[in-house]
Length: 292
Image (tube, rainbow, N blue to C red):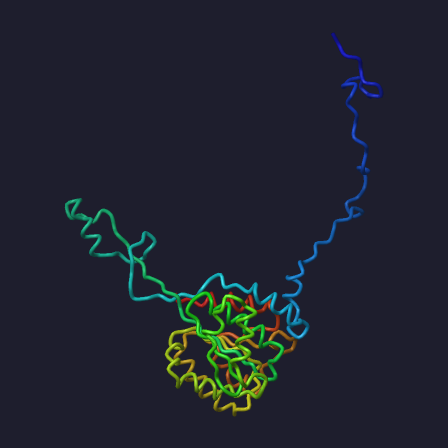
């Protein structure tokens, strides 16, 4: 028994209740005429690329809470542990295993050095010229202070330790408390004096073998010769020195300010830090400071 052919079917076949879909586009339409919806960045991604001067306090707090430190710089210690990926041959375990094969070292046991977290020391300029960037820099310092063993300081005319203050679970509360602790905020700048005070204090040992990050625009009331002398001492004690300048990303920027020009020869990297996107890149750069 055969079913009747569908009406309107060109070949006379098919089912009577089956219909062809309506034509929605012409096959000859060129690809240029087809519109593709434009992909726009999210609100946070758009704000992360804007300078700090264009952000209000609520936007700075929102972006600051989302600053994260995924990786941490490490250092190679003198200790070693067994591992198949090691380059050195562990002599004693190899001889112990050779007892099973008539003292023939058939299987070699390898070892590799143990890596420990490297200390990070961050210093933030909170003087008048850094008023727009100081709060964002404090958020970056808090991100490092809450993850591992990081020492953070703020300076204008005097040096203030903020390690304990910035370890608060709330980013807004931590930054607000830090603003209360720093009594000389939005005043003058004495970079050389504060670096010398750090090296002379009992926290100076924290700089030894550490990654030191200085956030400042380079405007300093101390003579450039004094800054060069203290930076030379810091260079001999630290493992890496990273200077982040909010104006380094400006087109045509050149470190011609007296203090910045004096400190630059002793820095390993000069990084722009004018947006939250730049701060995320600074955190990535710090995480990459690992010994060979």
